[in-house]
Length: 232
Image (cartoon, rainbow, N blue to C red; front, side, top):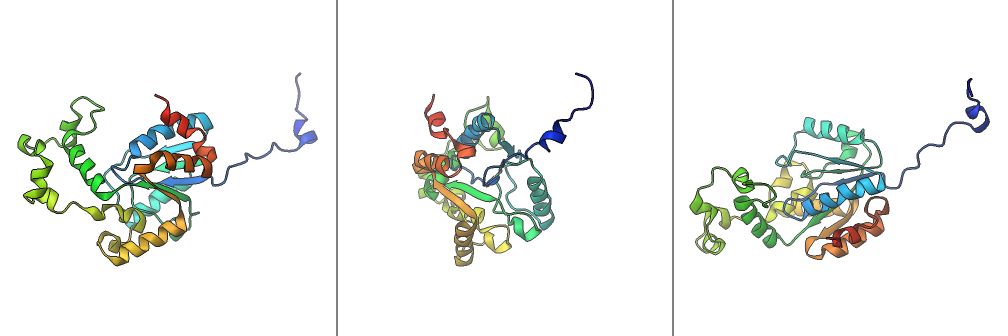
């Protein structure tokens, strides 16, 4: 058949793509709280379910200037929907800069366990790459790298006398300078943001239950996640 198609005359324009609700999800993952496992699952799930997984290679910049916030929010907001954006970054208020506020999810863990995990991660990485521990902390002296954590704590080494148990709070408090100051104000603001902007904040020690809830709450993104997680 050669000629001009009359399909649109008879049928009208093709239907618009129906987006799931929510179609904008942000996972501002807290360091050393199982996020690498979850991101690995998300890579599999994005191919399986056809959503846009937007990841960032920036792992060590969680606090942003106002201009950096505006730029990042602009980049995220223009991503093809449905999207799930993930990065180690303190809570971003999209509505402050005129954007649509996405649904947030996150996972935290017992702060002491997080400190222990980070202690060994700084020394030995996660062994996913050859000499990864040397890349992680290349200038660390051998006696420091193999320092027994009990000695570190009992003898009040600087690394262990201030274990940054407050570390998790700013991920929920946000980018305000006061969010970086341990205290009641930051804690209360974090709790308010959790209530208003987070669909779910899971606990790593109960990861399978968290994945089950994500599968129920966000099926377009997490359907079958538990079976994938359990599959060797």
